Length: 246
Image 1: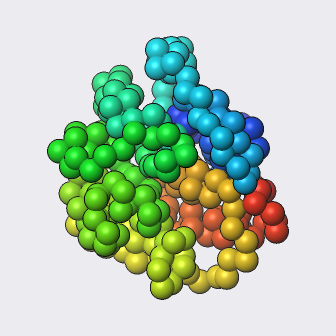
Image 2 (image 1 turned 45 degrees about the vertical axis):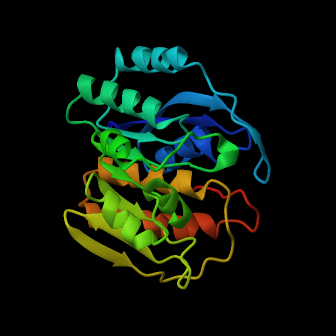
């Protein structure tokens, strides 16, 4: 019997199952890995309405993390909804301290409705990102993170600190055109299939499938292409805001 790779997600709980740790686990398991989860917030929402994040106390988040890492080892961790840069820094530092080779994939959920405390202090951002292997912002999030209205320039700026996969769902001219900033190079992934339906939680799903593909040791570019292909299937899986995983 083949042993599945263990992947940990640290994110919020979405009752609709479309985003957050439920969506992450669905995606991780659909990609033949074994999913574990630490909850950062109990959100009040459905697939079309967000009310509040209801943050879990930080000491409880760390307690969840400690009990898992007491008996499990993770080589790849996905981080989603988190309350602040400072908390992200402390979680990342703890993970790396306990497992120096561990790689963190950060999906930066920065909308005001989610309650994220973000700013444009690049010196602080550099400190935050030093332990992050790759971040997966969309077009709007990269502007918020970098403070630069030019998304590509903002991504290039962040790429000085970490690898960046800039998702193109909000691309101003070519929807679905993505950019990977990796080891000094920029790879462009053009959309090859038509996406008929948008999905709640698509950012969570993408970062989770990318984490799974990286954990399976695909080369980074191939892992990104496989993840993009998975997203096409997920986005077209139903006409509603909630997708399915096959």
